[in-house]
Length: 155
Image (cartoon, rainbow, N blue to C red; front, side, top):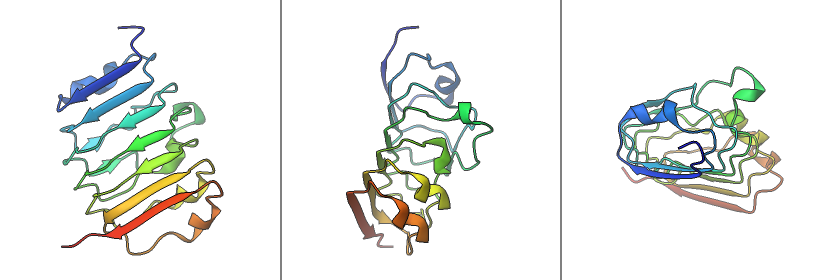
C-alpha cells in the first residue's frame, strides 16, 4: 500500500494508526475506539483528516509537538464532529496550516486551546453544540476567518 492516497475506515481497532503509509493524503477514521490519540501519530502529507463520531476520544494532541517536523504540515481540513467525550481541544500548533476545523457536537468541550489564535490560515471554525462558554481572547488574531459558527449544548 505504499501509494495509497485515500483511506476511509469506520470503527477499526487502534492498530491502524502507526501503520499508515506516508503517501496518504485523505484519512477518514470515523467511530474510532481510541480514547487518547497517540502523540507520535502525524503525517507530513496528510491534507484531510476526519475522526468524527469517535465517541471515546477524550484528548487529541494536547501536547506541543517535539519539533517542527512532527507536525501536520499540509493538513487543511480537520473534523472531530460528534466526539462527545472530547474534553480538551488539541494544541493547534500540530496543524499550522489548517483551513477548516469542525468541533460541532463535542458536548464536553469547554475550552479552546490558546494556540487557536495562531491559525493564520483558518477560514472555517464550527463550534455548534459544544460547552464552550467563552472564546480565547486571541481568537481575534484569526485574520483569514470567514465562518465562525457558534451554538451551545443543551444538557
